Length: 105
Image (cartoon, rainbow, N blue to C red; front, side, top):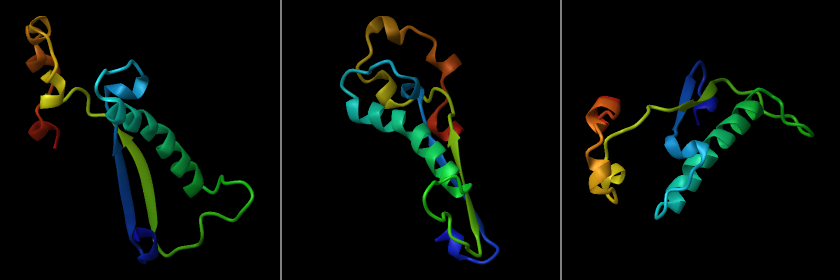
């Protein structure tokens, strides 16, 4: 839609987390798989928008444009982070390393 609007430049930001580099997180298979696939999807869309798709004319000529990016805010202090944590892990100084969702927003 953004590309069809004259003189409009849209931005898409795909947010990734620590699961993007691998390392399993038991109980969060869907979450990890989705996060791990985002950088590949982003790189593919960027290449397509740059006209690097072989075999057909893409992207079409449009009056607007869009850019796609990957954003990695670092550790965010959420319920998911501590839900299945151990007492030893809870002693870890998360407040030093993790931001709250409000700070990230």
